[in-house]
Image (spheres, rainbow, N blue to C red):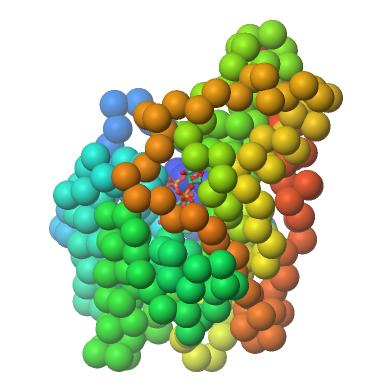
Length: 325
Ligand code: NAP
Ligand code: G4F
């Protein structure tokens, strides 16, 4: 029988890739779409799947709409990807971030418990939850959690709620602790896409500088298209569990810039970078590097795209987009 998946956050980067992956597997895909003044379907349109998705109106802050959407979808699998996902904004809008990213997760868990209790549930947890715990150590599923932003605290709350609903109500909940993953569909405010877009603009003579914040912070950057496969694999297991998804390698923001300018064929790249205090954070997470050995051993998951491949893919996509304009 055709499997049914319900995705919150379907209009975001991961939602779009996951929807495509599930459609290719023959799933019927439902997506929660909130009301905006202008629709935000560009990612689903770029992947050519907009018309294959059944959109259900709703918002993570509105429990009634979630109940109705879950009732309508009658899903076998629920992927809770919706969030206020930008760390920088989470200091300026801490209450909103908590309402969507933390409390919204209880609302969708309640909807699943009450209207689709047999559904398997994926929670989008984050490597941000580690904060600076363990310093430079490679993080694994046993590393202590010490969040450093309102976003990370909200994700930590949501993570433990998903675990608690497994223990309390027997729901099949899995948390994917995903390290940073990027693509040409990444939101422009995140540093990787800001860099790929900025470098493409400089290359095409449309800009002459790139303003960034902390160039020293390091992230374990992978490709979003690889990471959604791990989300799905978690829900295909007999037992619910939590898994880290990462590449195991870490690079600085400066490394990302250097590689992006290299792809664009620009050697004197340092002259284009300026640091702007507006992009510094009140509290910084300095280094992230994760071990996905558990995902490799149990799910058989490994990343396919490496750092250089990711940067190339992103810069080339932005060069193509901007050249068309
Ligand atoms: P994203 O591109 O920012 O997408 C966020 C999605 O959430 C969008 O579809 C957005 O809808 C939706 N959303 C926001 N507020 C909502 C609300 N009140 N009600 C319903 N939907 C709402 O994020 P992403 O990169 O795809 O990440 C997916 C999930 O994984 C997020 O939970 C994120 O926190 C988490 N995560 C991401 C990473 C990463 O590196 N990408 C790593 C770890 C965890 P609109 O289109 O209407 O704005
Ligand atoms: O790209 P970022 O904004 O991503 P961040 O904060 O690591 O969060 C992303 O990954 C998390 C997983 O670890 C997700 F949970 C979360 O939803 C999101 O997807 O910033 C990366 C680093 C930071 O250290 C930041 O301070 O880049 C640094 N940075 C330097 N200049 C900048 C900039 N970040 C942004 N956004 N813009 C800058 O100009």
